[in-house]
Length: 553
Image (cartoon, rainbow, N blue to C red; front, side):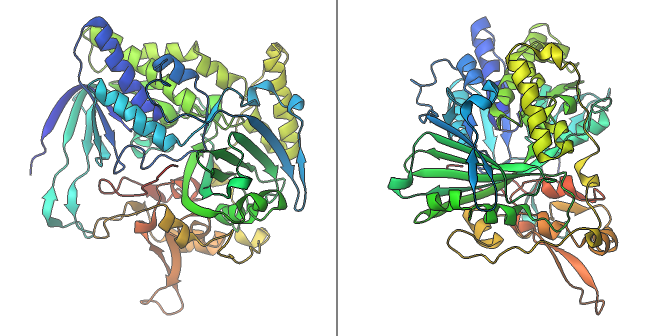
């Protein structure tokens, strides 16, 4: 069956902060100039916000520029930060670092605690009011190229394909969305963004991207324990000094607490389970008192870009650009990325609009790259560029090193630290053989503060049509046994936060095992795509609308 095609001036892949900010800015510029331009946003989730997962404390700087009157427009942003704490944890104690010792860049006053998913839902209404067409439940599954090799849009995935590849009675081919320019705002480790980086050599000359996995729960706590506006970050226990990461606890809304844990994915021990480190963290004396007597109402997980300025690829290619976390603009020490994601979306929109106004089609939006280099988003990342690579010195020395760099930059003395440290190799190269790493004995779940993976996945409202092709592809299925299981102890069944991967008895080979992929559990965190030691697992988009359906996350 031939695919239908729709024509737009700009197609945006992804309905997160970057994509929606770009769409709004394009329509604002069109209205200011009295022009009509067609703008379309594709979102793979069942609705805008369904796949959005973040802490989140947002810096409103980009939003102030995009929609200065966001307060009167009813934005779901109503919990300003009132108390900001940073704790160092040992197994039994918590030591608070005085605010005056922390670099001003890490101060959260003036920022807001939000559900980023709800903010994106609101941004979508603002975009639609301006005439943006938004299509949720339609993942972009294929990049379209013209005869010159330039990007000319994307195609959505086919619907109604059975697990064996056969067409079911309800089969419908995907649709082509053709555009003069296409902006990719897929978020961290986007599948099409990875393809574009490889095809156009966008990563030549830059450091490997570095990643973390962020796990989050939403709790409704007892009113007496709720401190609206309180922000807490921690480092230390339960992670050892060779493993980077930390936590966040944010009080907002009506007795809601967002609690989360981040583990940097360059960890060495294949026995380490980020999910179980998170569950163990909640039992710390400084944490459990907040949650006891409360109710867990949400769960999710998501990979996070951590490479910073050194890892940002070339942003443009013929016919389009990477914006937001598709390129990796998150600020790791600030635990923020939405402000930079929105700003880069706005900058790309301005470059695309200028190109359209000049009757250009399908060339490189070099003005976007130039604008980023002179923007406050670039400065935001430049100040912290040495924090993440400095952690290779170890958690404590690396933290002191990063703090010194941030202090000097905040004091206007950045010239004293002009160097830029480089990242070591990609995260998938860091695992030790299982026989060379200490085993970790995680405690049993108590069902009160700590929970198993499957009950957590239930709270994420994850759903996939079971009779569809598995969207977690193995380049060589034999490697799962001969390398991953034999050498590393099967790390995919450990690092996956959703119970997707299991090594089970192989019925065809007595005494042998095989890898079972429970794709219907996948919360789209992309950790497997990042951490697999041979890069054997490739994440692609499932049928439209599949995956988590996060609420208030």
